[in-house]
Image (cartoon, rainbow, N blue to C red):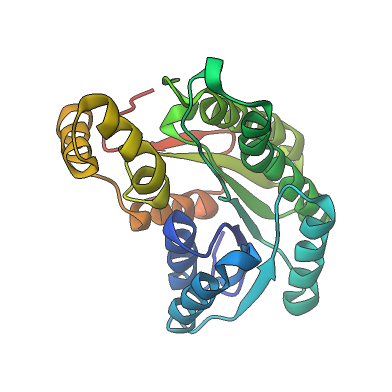
Length: 260
C-alpha cells in the first residue's frame, strides 16, 4: 500500500510507541487519527504538533478502547473527516506488575480489557469498511511477552499472546477481502511501561536502581546491546502497512532478545 494520502487510526498515540508510530506513518504521507484518553490531552496536542510538521492532516479522538460506543464514535469521526480508513494500528495498552497469587480480579480485567478486548473492538469497528473497499491494513501491537511469558506480568503476557492469536484468526477472515492483519512485538523500548512499572520492580528484586537494572537487562538480554526506539517500532508498522503480501505475521523488534 502506498501510504501517501491514506488515513491511519493509531490508538494510544499521545506518547511513547504510539506517538512514534504516528510520526513514522505521517512521514509516509498518511493522515493520522490520534486516538487516546482525555487525561492525556496535552500529550495528544504535542503529538499533533509533530505531525503538523510532516504536512499531514490530523484528527484528535478521545477514546477508551474498552468502550464499544467510544470506539464506534472514533471510527465515525474518522470517516466523517477523511472519508476512508486505510490503516488501523491497535497500540493502546497497559501493564501492571504482580504475581498471580497477589493479583486482583480488577487488575487482571483491566489489562485484558485494554490490551485484548480493545484490539478486538477497534478491529471490528473498521473491518466492515475495509472489506467493502477491499483494501486495508491492521497492525496490532503485541510484545516479546506475547512470545515468551515472564513472572509477575501474567495478565500482560496473556493479553499479548491473545493479540497474536487474534491477529492470525483475523488475517484468515479478511484475507479474501485484500486486507492484511499483522502484529509487531516490541522488546526493550525506553517507554512509560518500562520506566513506570517494569524497571522499578526489576530493580527492587535485584537490589539495583532502575537505571542499573535497565543497563544490566540490555547488556545481558539484547543481542545488539542496545534498546529499541519508538522510531524502530514505527518503521516496522510502516513496513507491514506497505507489504501487500504479508499477513498473519508477528514481527519481533527486540534487537535479538526474542528470536522466535
